[in-house]
Length: 323
Image (cartoon, rainbow, N blue to C red; front, side, top):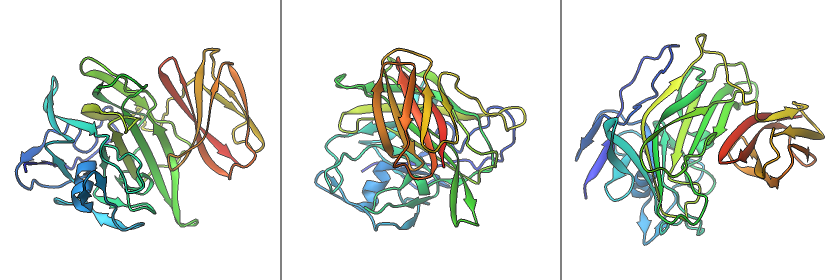
């Protein structure tokens, strides 16, 4: 079986505009053997290490930390996630959702790529995004690049997904605090060919993070066959490396909040509202038709959440602190 291996250049970063993330365009590729250093975990690599029985992707040990260097978890199999060409380079990443692959509990097993040189599993033994990532001490304002998404069924509102999580270790509390989080700030809708994209990164703290996790998924409906290409990934920074972009389409008050929060969406169009926890889980969702929504916060645990709305094919995200 042919194997395709990702490798990266370790870049010395600065506060300049357009700073590249590790292996920004997936150009350093070697076929058939081990290339230098690996900083991406892939769904195919996880399948190979956990083992596949029929269509079931077996888990690893729950709540465990694994090295992702060398062959471990970094391989891209030729029949699934793989290297492809694009108008911008000879080596773009292709991420595929394959509906026949399932987890042991029957849930769909999505196609994904996660940055990082280690892999941490959740209570079921599958990758835990909130505990993955690599050291990173900068404050980018957006992630940009080129994408191309194809949904072969056209039956559902399916599009590619990107999750970005910046964290900072808190020695007093003994865990990492969320500095910034976004989950597909824009939808990667189906396209006929590669197009540019930009994802704003909203911050909830003035601190400088120490870790970043970037994950891409083959689609938001893993039970549907789809393919997601990515190329030329880079971060943008403000001149001082500190300025964040805010989305005026979505306003929250009071913030911090305790009993209730008013959400202004700046539109009377029909849309979707989601409240997302820092681990990426959806804790509330509803449809709306009014420009102002009052949300009852009783029953919510104190912490940082993210309010996300989708209107007319676009996604907007703002942090919400619940006291």
